[in-house]
Length: 190
Ligand code: SAM
Image (cartoon, rainbow, N blue to C red; front, side, top):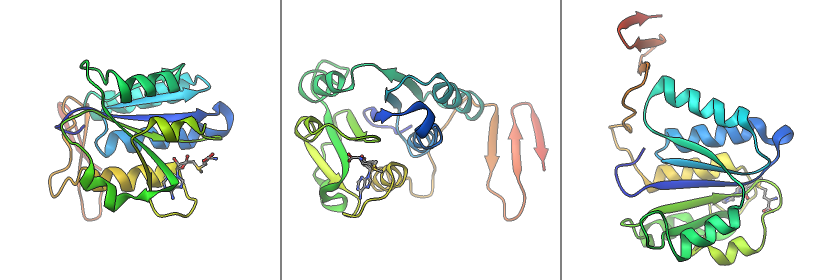
């Protein structure tokens, strides 16, 4: 998770049967690339939320994943009233129709919580108006996972030091050719 104000990812339009893998990958990408909280909207899906909670338990950090029953209400409140500390936050909608991300990122206030919105099924037109920014990772159709990864990577360049994920049971040690896994209390080279 990032060191600044919290970064939220709001996943719209989850379809339990059709999107289970991609929404899980979206949550894992949000976590690994520095977001603090993942809000799953659309069909409830305890499997996805349990997968994300299990990864956080095993690999550390305090990433949260939850279901959001009323995503547009949540987003409207976040962008206009209260991003969690009583003041509005910055809402960014990733869409192929948006402005170039490299132009938008330098314009973003970094002292306020952010909500990054990605779609699934048909994205309601209202989202474009609620969000202060509509941002394209290029203007070709691709995937919410790719869009989120590229945006977060450029928003939160980690440089040489990756994000901190304290308190996990597993710590991966980068290796040239092996799987080097440190387990809390047990060192294990595979
Ligand atoms: N059917 C959806 C709609 O009504 O817009 C879009 C489906 S698209 C596969 C799923 C999501 O991926 C989009 O809502 C958007 O968040 C993201 N996405 C896809 N291509 C993108 C691009 N070029 N730039 C930014 N986000 C993109």
